Image 1: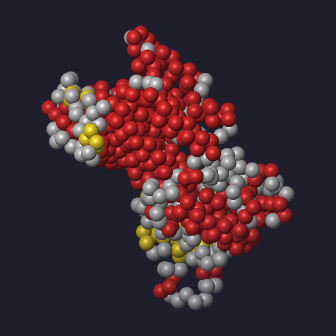
Image 2 (image 1 turned 45 degrees about the vertical axis):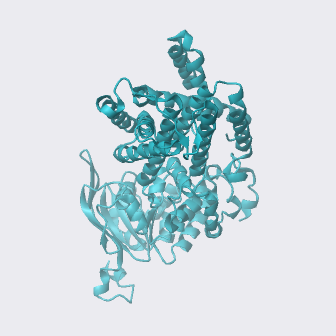
Length: 276
Length: 330
């Protein structure tokens, strides 16, 4: 852990607190006695891609919902960018630059692809309560929206209804919409779930590209993706943090191997299994 | 990008992109012309008093549709805004002697003000709870109206004068009043269309399509729902205020729960979330009530049968089914 923390050279002793964009302490969520997330203390370093992995039912998505305030934690605190956000509403944390995606692709199906991105741009740039104006004024966001669509390779789909896009393209659209808010911390919930090989490669390249200058926290099942993309990972099992650190280090942790695969010899073997 | 060039088939949108004048699709433009022609021609063939009432209820239904059809909120207490708008306008005309355009605006203001308070309370809950809260609040308004002296209880405010429009044109004769009512209706109708096709309307659509996603983009969705609620209640107040001047009377009927049910029926029958549905629905319901009136209880029975048939077989409503059949947006 220590050697990993020291890789970022320019940070001195007092800089270490600010070094983490997101920190949780003792985060716990109980549903009628069932503890979905228990005493989770996460630390996400600014400017990194951080993976959150774990077997099914480990509490990853619950964790996501807690961090983005879609769920209220039973106990514990969340600090984002030096500010306590534990009691905030989801729309408020989104306004602070902590923006999430969803596991089920979340687009506005009857709006066009371009309009989907514009809805996000419109929020940030104001005028969203203007009920007396024509929506033609929204065309001023078209250029920026088209840039974002070009970024994710959706230019030719701009005028299509978002609901008609193939699955992989919907995920790309969702990332474009999230990027429209220029988030400081982007939370991606299984961005490659249910995708074909080509789509996975495209999304991986995309995430790597858009992570420039921001922090990404992603839940991911595909360990190959995690290995290729993430600077650090946190392993959750049964709602608890099992290990945290760089992938190479965590993947050798015998406890992680046991939790993830039972008796299987190597974690990379599971990547193949998860992928198949 | 190679795959993008090979996939033109799934690029075709199922619905044509909005275009044309002022956000009206071609089919909507044609329907608008037909409606305008009907508004101009019909008073020479049909009893104007009936048409005026129809236009008031059509505006009421359109206002209600703004909420259920475009935000997805089922208010079961819209009679409160309609009825209070009616009382306010009646009082302003009779006691203060204000000109009709001011009376109608006061009706709208009262509806909007009430909508702001009730909406603020109700919007915290969704689905059936939202409907029940709006109903409960509306019934409180009804009992308030039964008790307070200015509504004259069971008698209602009767013999409401119409006065002169802008203090110049006397609206006493029905044909003159008709053009005033038609103008109020059209302004309300076009305002609703504008709201739907405004930056605000775009956010409403996004919220209806995927509320959690809208939240995750940083939209405080309750604020948007509340503004839609206030606009809807305000227009319901305008409709009630205009109706009071039209029929010279404002009574407890306007503010009681069957009125809330009636507007639900009109909107469902015409077609939820269609621009012209509520107008057609209001026309059908009003025509039945007026022309089947000699048959007494048969009105209610046939309304019930139509309602059941509509829910079972024509869920999209008259205009909704027509639009599906013609594959256009109406």
